[in-house]
Image 1 (cartoon, rainbow, N blue to C red):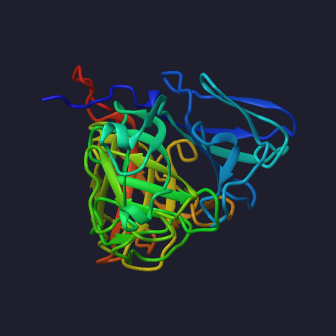
Image 2 (cartoon, rainbow, N blue to C red; image 1 turned 30 degrees about the vertical axis):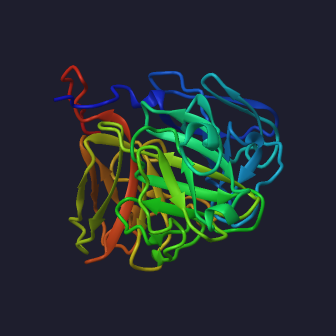
Length: 354
């Protein structure tokens, strides 16, 4: 039995820290492998400022903001996606002496789906996909709602069933919609809000995604008429990514979550209560315990304190705090995690704890 699908996670995901210089700057990743990013999510750490998300499908000058409902912007912050990182100019993401974090994912293979020709999905889609890493970026516009009774199916390109989908209307003010396979198909979360999971049978049409398509119902969040949508779609890969849930125990000797790898990145959200999303990573906190939090639904600076206490272990993460964001007794939480190293490589080399 294979221990992992991916021996070098840095080929597909990396976290990079940098300090702005107020001019132009090229940011180079530091993993074992070069990574030409297709999705970059950047946040200023030292100051208040929005999360900015760009991708190669929409274009480098078109940010979306996870902490807001704004339509796609038009900014010159990034100047290029490079073979191992990205380039910046003097703007919101490169102000002098400010510190930043950039989370980067690789897709890379372009696809276009003519639904009427392929018979896959009910409307056309296009994007970039990496089936090895279980990640795709999908763009679609439903121009045919009346024929579909307000329901549409969209090809995602993964050839396996997605576990997480993060969708946003590019053209209009709108909440982000998040699907997670640990939640019922009649529930969704909003990335830009701290709300608990909401019940709405129309967001995903109460239908789980399949290995070829995902479904959106008759609603303005995931299926607006004649407006462009973008989706970031993830499927679990052994030893590289994990999307699951856990129940808090309300104890400083908290819940242990097995992932099958040493985490590089963990995002957590409580689903039964009003609590912010929280991101931890191994670059802002290279040693246990983690102390710096960032919140996708907030524009606040990085927050250092015991409320984020979590150990990144060789095979998962362990909560070290009784806090509403991570480990309230009886609280239900979902997470998405990406690896620094698999627990054991395909050749039998074990990961070491940090």
